[in-house]
Length: 318
Image (cartoon, rainbow, N blue to C red):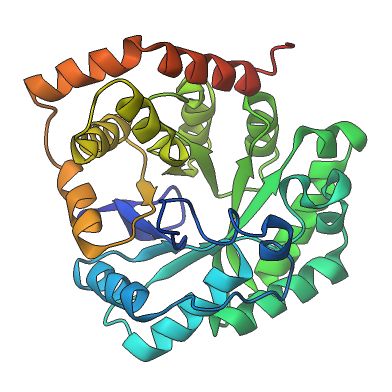
């Protein structure tokens, strides 16, 4: 497994990172697509996470040399912490996770992140779920209204994150957002972050313009996510007569790797899917794949999707 030096952290991470999502039979992620409010409630642990199939997938990832793992909701955190005790990795691993109920729209104006006592308590709670002493990569997902509501928001947040680092509760902070370019640039310019976590795919590539170059300038690591647009790529393909979904996945992964992120988070259900994604990281796109890609890029569904994402990223008024 190829590894990249991750920003200025001094850490080398695998070019493929394993996402923590587990999936329903129809391919949608568990928790979020069952009872969303329950899934993102701190302390809620769903039944059946981290079962036999997930342990086998995790074991395969470790055998392949993957050393970076991303988990979101508490059910995934608890499962990973438990599974890593059962499997015992033979090499050092790094985990990215976020505070529950504090990111994105889960907390008004992301105000809880500014309360150091609340934030510290949340980090300690997460560590108990993961069975770890420190969070390697603490993902902080904001929405634009947080910085718009408070002119010194990022200064306070930077102080809190630096305090958590000094106390050894977190190692590195990761900038994340669903608000788009303006907020990403503000976060990176604040100096509070060591890496950036960003949607990077065929249909949502706007981060290439300014966010990724600034991240490189600031010596921040780059984590790419949503290579398959949360499955939208496959729905677009099927609607337009493209039945070979494995080929579509390969095309998407090859395109993402061509943008040179440090690692790409993949969400998969089986070891064979994981291996296919890894193989895509090292192969050039074939002529047939180029033809399929051009077909996808011309479809009305793809054009509509990419236009929506462009408007969201650049905050273009509808």
